[in-house]
Length: 248
Ligand SMILES: [Zn+2]
Ligand SMILES: [Zn+2]
Image 1: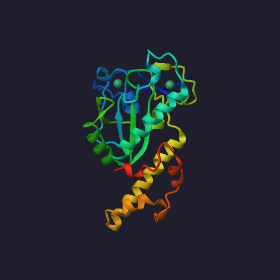
Image 2 (image 1 turned 45 degrees about the horizontal axis):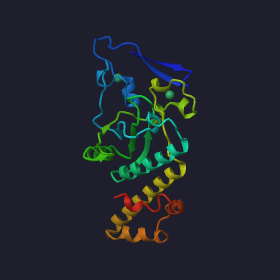
Image 3 (image 1 turned 180 degrees about the vertical axis):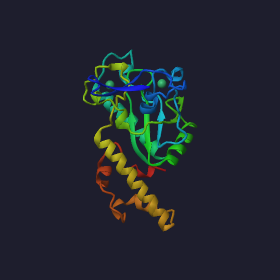
Image 4 (image 1 turned 180 degrees about the horizontal axis):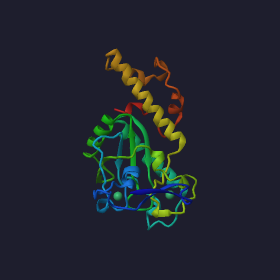
């Protein structure tokens, strides 16, 4: 059995494992793995980690390099960390969106081994998530081969440490919920707008059965026959420009 206990430090329900086996003697499932997508005991966990065969969500473990964990750099500049993180987020979003429609990305900056740098990506469909996982496992990032899996995490909200969102999680590296680093709001909006625009342009090109339609429309957004909402924001963001053509 497992129990859920309200803890003042996280301001939310904590998962506490009490028994390892069910009444019939079979091993129980690990609630940390099924809810957070990662467990500090890893493969040695006494409970079952049931890997999904189908999911909207993929996980790229330990992908984000948290500068706070660099022991050689004792000076931590929050603005520089955010700037570096935004570059990382933009790079990763563009790559992930080229493989399917990205609904949400969660990046952990927990200072423990099992959650540190984990990137969770929610795709629009299970098929897109599956194809993305297969494609990413053939690629490299930052000089290392990418390892990617389908994740059992259903809702990022349920896995997120709310106390950390309020900058007051007292559990530090023993906290088992996601400590998220968020991209700047303008960057996130611009990336999502560019993705939406790219999807509409591709749909238009497909419907008109003219492969050149997307290219023509991309060169002149004002001529696009569909309002894509905030396209001005995309054009005016200097670090991003019009990146819709990058979503292959
Ligand atoms: Zn476990
Ligand atoms: Zn926490």
